[in-house]
Amino acid sequence: MAVIWGLDLREMQWSKFGSTYMWNTDYHRRRTKFIVYQIAMICCVVSESLGTAALSDYVDQQDFVSHLNPAVKVHNNDFIGIASYNIFVGVYVATIFGSAFFFDLFWPERHESPSVKMAWRICSVLACLMTLACALAFTIILARNSAYVTGTNAENAQRLLAEYGGSPMRYRDNGRAIASVVFEWPGMIATFASTILLWRSLDYIDTYGPKSSKTRTRDGISKPTDKPLDNGSESVTPPAMEPAHTRPDNPNHATPNVNSAYDGV
Image 1 (cartoon, rainbow, N blue to C red):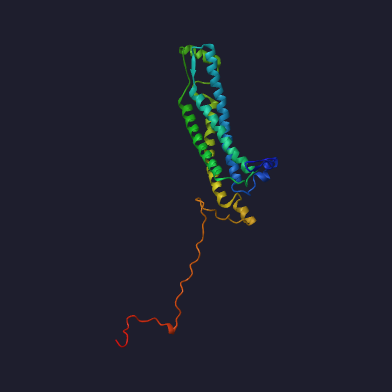
Image 2 (image 1 turned 60 degrees about the vertical axis):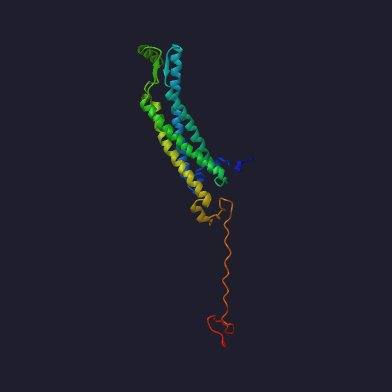
């Protein structure tokens, strides 16, 4: 099969999803990373799915009321906006840590350039910032805000909303919206934990390679040799200085005494 970006596609085998290979301890923190990565992905994707269901109801509510009376408008774009952002966050987290999961599963001993490792670090930090912003904004909007109707009186607005049914005007009364926020918070915490694991794993690989300390001890793998310095120069051991030669002690070569006076003067 083809080799893409240095990755041999023949390594993509269903057998690697087996517990014997997937949960072995041959590689550094393999099981810990797989568990935490999957918690982050599952929680964020579940939050995204529940938020999408609530989002769809509120969009349908707008369309339904506007269809009955074009002059009447339901204002719930704050919820629609944060729920849409939550969808993006869920997809982003699943993409970053899902990729890390599959790369570690299929190609645990792959070689990555410094730029690729930097990309991993930057993308994981962005995932932390986005999940934190989403969790905070979603919680505030859900707890404090409500939808409202303009273009008609309160009695007619209630009648139109009753004809649609569902999608309560007060967001915190929406069960699926509440569940979406509840899953978003552990997803955010797991995203932070995944980022810490990813960073530490990259540092460990730079120093010792992908194998765990237990495996390196078992197989007799020593620490990789030190790499050249970042500025391109190599560490060179200066040659040893030869000891200074001293004049041999020879009675025939006595050092003259400059302070002594010459005879006959």
